[in-house]
Length: 449
Image (tube, rainbow, N blue to C red; front, side, top):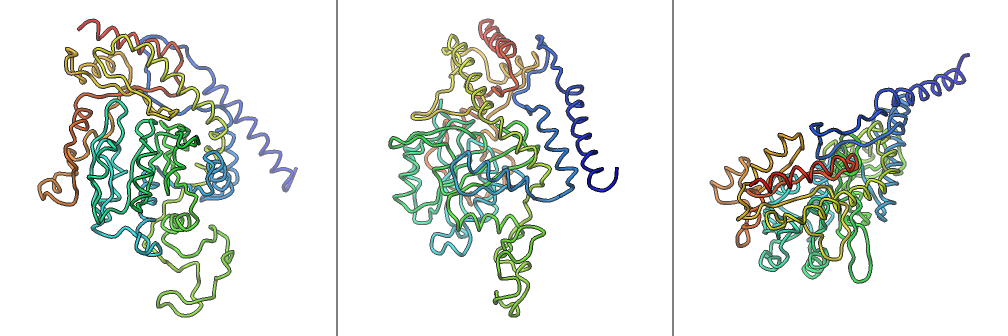
């Protein structure tokens, strides 16, 4: 058999072998026994992801292509937004969302060096890093316990004549007080970036309307690293309903170029050799006109192909996370006199990333002791990311110089989280046996103290 018919036959044969490979290598899951490793999260997949990935590899389109287009459309459709831009990580998504707001096209609302952005120190560093690297000033607010999100009572005190934006994450899937934050931003003409990396599928209700988190702000960001709600291996996205912000995000993602033609495609913009830009000669090739100081933060079609399969499973993943979180919450209530259990934010239905606990002052044991006990029983634990980011070594020079950031009042709860909080997983790869063992391990430790 020759030509395309031969290639088609071989392709079908490869796909069937891929399905068989999945069955042989991955399908036979060993039943959990106490002592087996319980990861806080991880990839959950079946033969579909392997088939999509192999199909993409056989296409051998090594940059963004039709799978990336499909994934962006599916993600935007799931959220109910107009635009989704696929990138290579959630951290890159945060960088792009912030940098888009520094663009000259935004006029007086543009974030400039020295302008202020309200955020929190209790979270993942890449929500804050772009602010500092650009030369803007993060203004840190404390958080509340047990919601672990921004203390909105401090917002007005954080406001200054240099404030341009609010950049906050929905902590471990639990939405922050979007109603108060959104109203604050609207009243003061501020941009709102929702770091939705840990909250894909969470829902928040405001003024009688319930929508997914990531749809209330001007921009929202996502991570598809393996522990997250879906995975592309590495990957992220920036989403918006604003066509100008979407164009800016894509420009900064794609080297800062002015042209919006896709890779390998010419002149869909109709400006290939027309117009004058900057001090370039008339008719300079628009493919090589750069209107911003950008990056190359694109993902590949290989990554996007996995995401196309994962998106089909997302509703089931979300329900599993909720179910697992609720089981832990109910069965650990008996020790709520020793540990502060997490609480769902008002007016919300979270798509949980993890189950966060804070050891009480009179518990009779320390957070690190509980963590050590669980790890010795092969139960993976995590702290709340950076704890208090300002206490991290990367802040040494800024702390010594006493500049480049502001703190509103104290970060008392943030410090408490840094010292006394830890979380365990609720991801769809867990079953009741694993959850029961986790509960028994926590109860057994606490009752023995």
